[in-house]
Length: 372
Image (cartoon, rainbow, N blue to C red; front, side, top):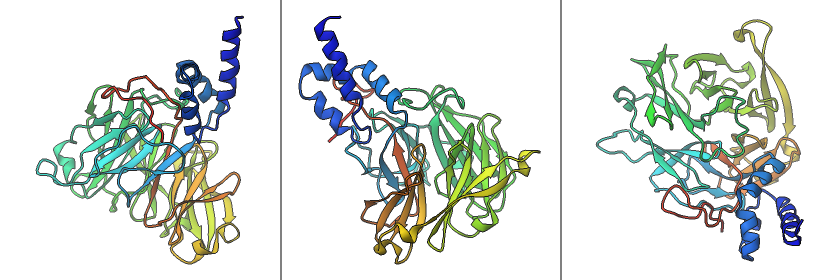
C-alpha cells in the first residue's frame, strides 16, 4: 500500500472518533487543508462515522414558545433558516415539521405545513389539506421516514422519502386522518372514526414500529394510529397518569411509554402486551427517579413538569421557572439547556451532522452543512 493511502487511512481513523454531539470539531478539521477536507467530506467517511457511533446525537430542540430557530444544545447551526411565521409541530428522523400559523385568506386557520431538513437546508411545502379539514376542532401531526418499520436504521434519512401523518377532530366528521407521501407529493384519501368527545392534544407524538400515538386533551386516553392499516383506536392511560401532564416516549425495546411527575418524582410507565388481543395489554411502572436529589434548588421552586422526550438518546426534558433541564435516563445526569422555562412541550432534534463541504444541497447550491 502506498504511503499516501496508508496515511489517509490513519487520518480517517482519528477523525472517526470525533464526538458526534460536537460537529464543529469535524468542520474545523476539514478547513485545515484540502487533504483533510477530502477525507472528512467523502461519503465513505460519513457512512463509517454513522456506523461507528450508531446513536445520532441530540443537536438542538424546539419548543411551542419559540420560532423555528433552534435552541442549540451543540455546536450545530442549520444551513438555512425558515420564515419566522412557521412554528415547529414535530421532529423525527432528521426532519422538522413546521406549521404556518399566520392566517391568510386562502388558509384561514393556518394549517399549511412544511417539512424542513436543517442539515441539508431542504424545504418542502405540503399542499393544503382537503377542504373539510381546514377547520378542525383540534389536530396534531408527525413526520417520519417512509421506510417500513425495521427496514431502515434511521442513521441517514435526509434524502430518503418521508411521510407526514395528520390526525384531527371535528364533532361533525369525527376523528379524521390523512397521510402525505413525498414520493407522490399528495395527501392520501381521508380515514375517519367516531368522535371520542375530546380533541387531540398538541403534545409530541410517539412512534413505535409502524404505529403513531397522540395524547388526547382529556388526559385520559391515547389515540393510536396504525400507519399500515390507516386505522385509529383509543388506548387508556394508566390510572396514575390520569388528569396530570404526560409525555409519550419510547421504551428501550421500542415500545410505547409514558413519563410524568408526581411529587418531584419522575415516573416512567411502559405498555406490556398481554396474552390475548391488544386491548388486554396493560401498563407497568418501569422507573421512578427522585428529582429532589438531582435538580438544583432553583428548579424545585414551582412549575416543574415533563415537557419532552428525545428518541434514541433516552433524554427527558423538564420545565421549571428556572429554565429547561434535561435528564439522561441511563446516567441520571442533569443538564440545564435553556435559561427560560416558558413552554408546554419541546421537540428535540436528533441527527448526525458531518461536513459536506463542496457538496451542493437540493436548493440553491449551498453547502450541505453549515456549522458555526
